[in-house]
Amino acid sequence: MPASGAPFSGPPHPTSGAPGGPGGLPPVPAGMPLWGNTSTQAGPYGPTPLSDADPTRRPAHASRRRPTMWIVAAAAALLLLVGGGGVAAMALTGDDDKKNDTNTSAGDGKGDGSNAIQPDGGGAKVGDGGAAQAGTYKVDRTVWYQGLKFTVKTVSYDPAAKENPLTMDITVENTGTDGQNNVRYTEVFFAYDGAITEGGVEEVQSLPGRATSNGKFVFEPDKPVTDLRKGELSIGRADTVQPKIPFGDLDRTTTLEPKKLAGPVEEKRSGVLGMKLVLCEQRADYPAEHQQAKKDYMFVVCVVDLKSYKQSIYDHGVWKSNYLLKLPDGTTTAPERVDNALLNQNEQKQGVPLSFTIRWPAPGAYAFQFYDAGRLGNDAPNAERPIVEVPMTLT
Image (tube, rainbow, N blue to C red; front, side, top):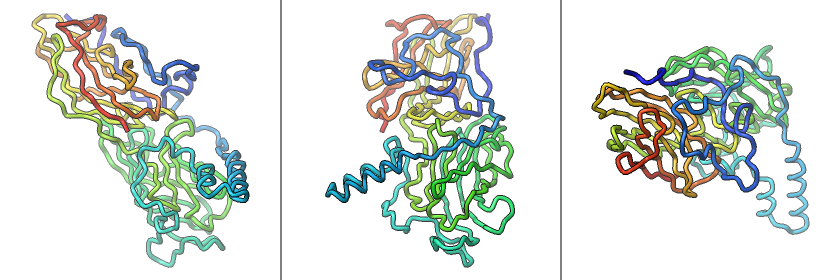
């Protein structure tokens, strides 16, 4: 006979929902652990996924300028005048987002324009700095956001165009197995000369699982663009971990490309359950539900295969409480999201996704843990149902 109710598996949530936002975790008081949920037990129906904003509602065009950067730059200039040295000035004026950037494209980072966008045929020129002129330029950079893989192929500007003078040709791939019906609501921004313009996504509405489509990012900047190398594309809300493409130095692109941590690992047994770790990745997104991590957080996303060896007419549950992530300080945290499962005798379930939320940066030695928590997920581990683990390192 089955246990009460079917396994909980909420519908996809196309918008962000992680600690720090509405419905997310509150700021951590001093002295509290710098992690997500540190409880080691959770019932079979555990906390429901964090609530999300309405994915069909586009927010107001709020200003995202950083007035404090003018003050910082002035301080750097003063240091130079009084002999503080170029190193100190560079430290003050550096991009503070880089401290959390673990997915920057490889390159020499010269910053001399050699890594900037380049004309894509025709008479286009880069960086005249004079009158705005039409042109198309190569970008060829790929970034990841909310389970979508965006490749920006070219950027084009036509000051004579009455609508959307700035466009970017893109391809977008749904890396999840479920369809994503809200691609068109992806928030995109173009920063140029102190102003930020919110754009839109065109020519692609929705994507089935694993599908790829062509599309466009379109913008209407408030001022003429005379040097596209000074522009920067960013994707997503400001309170999430954002991928960014600076057109003046493409090798400093924040790609948010997933990093493999572990897997595949042969099946491990605990009690009547067998678990095979297929893959664990360090990601800023959770493709199974098209979620994006909040700023200063990261996901550890894993996929497992499960099997029941129970010799009984009763099924056996696999819940949130069956999984743990061991942190560098020795504490553990439970997954924020997981597809629960009810397994009958000798039944298997493959490709079960789950994700842990951690504060970031917090590099170090981690371990994915699993054990048989009993039919309803309420039992502690013991000698017959031990914790099995797979070590991994986050960088």
